Image (tube, rainbow, N blue to C red; front, side):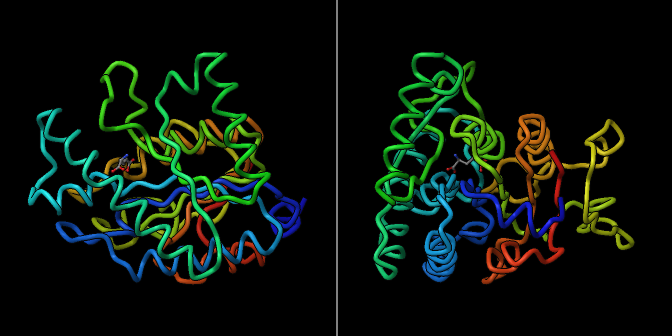
Length: 263
Ligand code: GLU
């Protein structure tokens, strides 16, 4: 099946928004960035796609509000940042969605919600009900009370787990880089973007690096792990540039943008 056809046929889409798109290191969440995302989400919804957001940014917003320059290492401090930042994040999302007449819903999950069969069912039912009512689920990990052992730890993997949970047809990981490269483009000049990936193998995983941004979590390593999880469950995955204000329009039009990982 062609790329364009596969994307056109995708009815249910999970979109992960990374912290780096929402805030510059050490700064407050950007209203402008959120407004841009809300416009794209509205375009996606109005185009008939069930659109589910997995958004980072709570810790970044909390760090700014509580004046932490670097990501705190102590768990209670990190969790306090998440507790302060999550309502800020949701408030800004709703304000941005209001302009398109859309309603968002906060859903905070942890690993057990996604692994325990009974809890999985509850989480799934809630998300499907929101989708049915054309409310946009805005999902994050329940960072304020996480227990290290049962934490997913990054929203790339959380987004892949959510995509599997609700039988999504497409997973889009939006970040500050326009795809997966042959080497880290921030450190290596000749690095080239890979357009299409048939299989995520060992050499590819060793090419991927973590993030340099103090407000962010995963980097390419967790994105590849997420793409592996989703594609193994037959869900095509795209890593693309969330700073491009028309990114979903371009993806939905079938443009060869970002990196597409085939199921
Ligand atoms: N849940 C974290 C937050 O909201 C982000 C985790 C991640 O970016 O992967 O800040």
